[in-house]
Length: 146
Image (cartoon, rainbow, N blue to C red; front, top):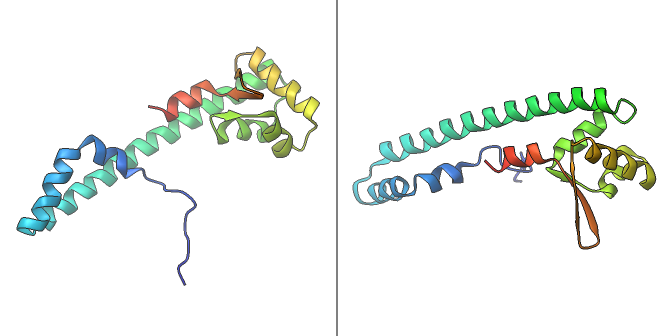
């Protein structure tokens, strides 16, 4: 039986490979034509190293941003702040009223009030697309898109 260890990849090696595509294809060809496994393995180890360092830096930046939000929300909206709310805001770069209701176990009115207050204070950007309203955590979105 195959056991699934992770729900999603921890390292996004494809970015490194795409950014170094010519080297990737050259080394892959050398494995086929010259049996240059050492070059290939060293390339892949470099990919893991660079990707790991980038992931560590991203995690640190997200933690820093979370700490800033925690402090800011506690100061600006102390009645709204909770660790569960903070986690919701950083689980994805956006949220919706339904997500807040489900995650925080609160009513639609309360979820709307919390998210609107966070948007008014500049923690989120409120955006209506069609019939749906999204609350975007722009700093998190920016971190994830770099």
